[in-house]
Image (cartoon, rainbow, N blue to C red; front, side, top):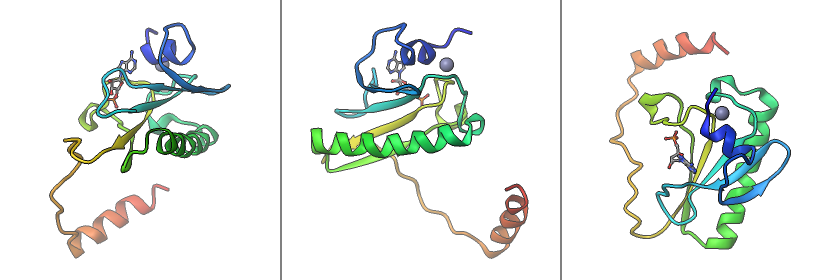
Length: 135
Ligand code: AMP
Ligand code: ZN
């Protein structure tokens, strides 16, 4: 399998690494949305969030928290988005699980917004019925 994030995470391709441990590499995104746009990459290949083992998922979010704090202390952004895309419809372009950390600055021109809909009572019941039993 030819996966660019496997190669970056395991050091086969050089990257702007901010942090590394046994299971993860934290790198600067090559096409940043803002100054300090960072990716958390597991060293093992999992395509998306659905495939992640529980322990890795827990550690990934813990590392996202540490990385958020490091970016906050180092770069002093005014906000920060944590984003994670699954499937091309959701904007995933590299099919190796990763978490984006996007520091936010005044007038950064990043658009991550939507027009809020209305949660109708009938939809609410249907959705709860369909999803609850899947846990
Ligand atoms: P996604 O659209 O969620 O799959 O995000 C993929 C991200 O990977 C994009 O933000 C790209 O800019 C970034 N990216 C792609 N190739 C590289 C690379 N070689 N090094 C660092 N970031 C990369
Ligand atoms: Zn991979």
